[in-house]
Length: 120
Image (cartoon, rainbow, N blue to C red):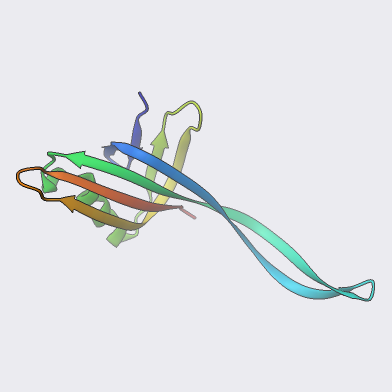
């Protein structure tokens, strides 16, 4: 079983998507009497979308609630996954928490997506 943690919370994750944004500039230049597009790359920044689900968790104990609080403070937290296929151990900031509630009858299911970015 894979354990995924974000800050002080262990998450029940259904999907993780990772992107790498290249940090750089592009500019036009003349080269051998032809106009070309040149690129200067300064580095890269990893971002993740993490889809999670909680069932029968009180709001006070909710990972979604915790992450909303963390995001408003801009504090970097640790993001880890012990999945041997793609281990993660990174300091991240929470950019967004998108929450979806299922309030049918007595069902208490909370689905949420967390957008993370590598901390500087």
